[in-house]
Amino acid sequence: MSDVVNPIKYEKGVCLVLNQLLLPTETEYRVRSNVKEMYIAIKDMELRGAPLIGISAAYGLYFAARDAKCQEFDGWIKEVEKEGEYLISSRPTAVNLEWAVKHMIKFAYSLKSRTLQEIVKEMEKEAVKIHFEDGEICKQIGVNALELIKPNMTLLTHCNAGILATSRYGTATSVMYVAKERGIPLKIFADETRPYLQGARLTAYELFASGLDVTLNCDNMAGFLMSQGKIDLVITGADRIAANGDTANKIGTLSLAILCKHFNIPFYIAAPISTIDIATPTGKEIVIEERSSLEVTHWYGKQIAPTGIKVYNPAFDVTPSDLIHGIITEKGIIRPKYVKNIAKIFK
Ligand code: MRU
Image (cartoon, rainbow, N blue to C red; front, side):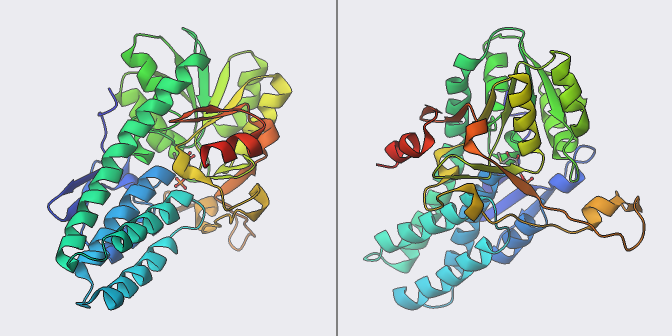
């Protein structure tokens, strides 16, 4: 069910990355086999979505470890750490990137007594493990979300928090795939997600290809859909969740959460525990990526706004935790009061 698309494959020292810039009309895998190539794939959004960025960063760090020149541990780990910083600089908001890099470096330190060749081999296995476990974690998120679902409900989601943003199942979409596997009928609306159109190009694509009942809507239609009683539940993903539950996700998520409050519709976030950044106390401290004005002024290469117009293009917004009914994770649904309930998980 959740294997209709596969955003990243790994074999013998090489990643094949599905070039998401060409979806939904073309399927092209690109070879990414060193840290620089992985940096470019993340920065240029060939691959995107917080968990997938984390998986790719883990492979990127393995490539850096394998290709580092120094032959003794202290010099070698310095080289690897430098490449880790380089990878982290590719995109600022998704915490899974930093999480994966730090995890791989800590893992390398834990093997310090072994030969460099052995450490590199183990790092390769660790990256593969992160990749595999992400699929398991995502499936569990879907299973845990089943308690929110009744047959024939209509869900709305924003951006792509699907298979294409993870390794399998997705986060926000996981319950949709799990419901389908269990024969529970659901209807789904997918926001197109301006300006980068992840909803239209990716979410609509993968749900449709998987045989789910999905309808595409423009972002500015969500309020009207809700006013017509057409939406029962909203679930989105997350790029970084602060220790108090404030959540950074694709631009437009905040507006949806506010609409949900107005129309009394439950609003949930679905994300792995690795998306929670316990070191960031509130959403105010989350760095929001600003992207090129061309994403707003141009449409597939065609200019659609006046030459020289001022543009503001933040890629994410922050939804305050008091608008969030729950955070669906692989360990269960975290409910308010978030400061206390998130801290419990990290004890
Ligand atoms: O800029 P992107 O495409 O990397 O952003 C992805 C998102 O914001 C998604 O909404 C998603 O929820 C986070 S990853 C599951």
